[in-house]
Image 1: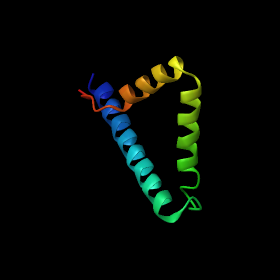
Image 2: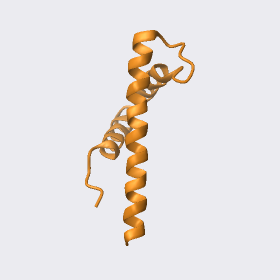
Image 3: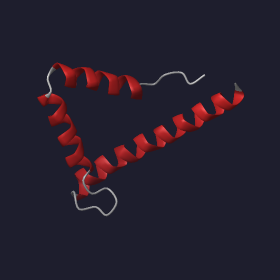
Length: 77
């Protein structure tokens, strides 16, 4: 059980780092523009995702709720 807990905490840490990098990419793209070397089309990709979810009506709303549930702060242990 200790190995499972260790893997879960490692995955949680990677997810948190990914979300921090996503936030950094959004802020950098808004401040500098979309021509950043590593953060190129982050804002465009987010806009396309929201547009696709909006075009799918109820299914898009359910998927959005699921995505928010995945990234909500939950207890790891």
